[in-house]
View 1: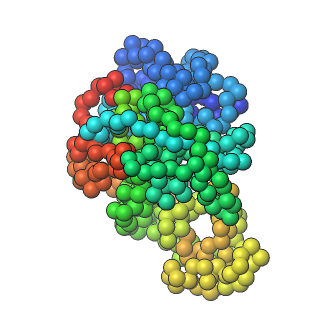
View 2 (view 1 turned 30 degrees about the vertical axis):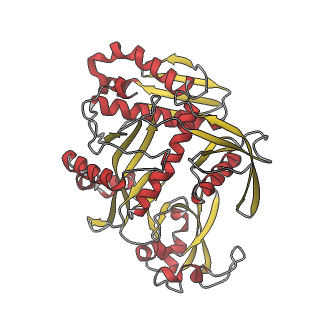
View 3 (view 1 turned 90 degrees about the horizontal axis):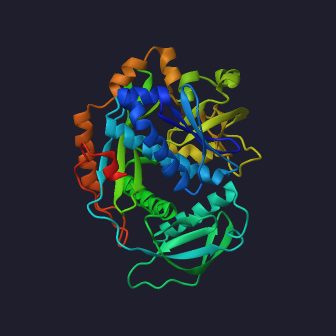
Length: 422
């Protein structure tokens, strides 16, 4: 489905508003609604995220919003904001092809106080992508330790104060072989009118809701959760049903949760089954490099970087043990299999081809002539989808712990005005 908005980063942060898609959505009301839509993009996606007022240029088929000189650390804020705005618009105008159940919390969040901790050796540095990842890993470790915590800004994490608990001036945490010292810089009362404070709470709620889905047996990948079963379609495609979830905190403290149907499509055969032999895999290396694959043990997504001559039973210099010994507990691995080198987020891993399945995308489906049949199989009936999400909400309520405990209404919103919830 074409997107109404397309965020981008190129020596600054920007958004493209597709006027062709806008005309499809708004019809004859486009000229009437366009000025307020432009103002909404500027306010919600640039001003409130701290990016600043963008340059706006209208072309024949699109409107371009661009703020030059803004670093990549702001891109994520803009991307999330524009994605939420697009979902609200699709929901409000009943866009064909967009299915979502929208749930709202019973009550707004109450006043929340947090303790801010500076990560020594990090918070005073110039922001970097790796530094943001380290801040997030530390916040995630605090969450696993039982704290209500999330990253607040670069090199700074916030811990929500809970009644009756005392908080140390210093906390030590080990991450990937390094020890970090967190030093308290004081307390702060959250203000939901501030975008940064809402994003902070959203990150906490995201962690809580992921925990809930995992406890229910879902395979959680980013903002998507999939059932722990799959079915075979047309003998060659494996379909795993699931959903995308997106949570937002509104300025009045209410919490909104979107649930949209999603499916994970992979080949029904592993690479080892598909190619049949070690020789075939090695001869096909050129066509396989760059291919997206999923590890069958946990659904993790990778890109193939290389296929080695070495067998899975042979030691390689990059590993302390053999690939065979690493994965033998997951099932029967043929000792003749070559080692497949894959990457994710820049890190390399070494996996047997019998534990990898190719990802099926729309281009692959079109080549196979299966686009329409798969669409029929995966597109849920609206009534069935609503019933499913209502049952899901009953099973996850409440999300979080006091004072960040949220009960969602168990029936989705219907026919609500965009301005009432945004």
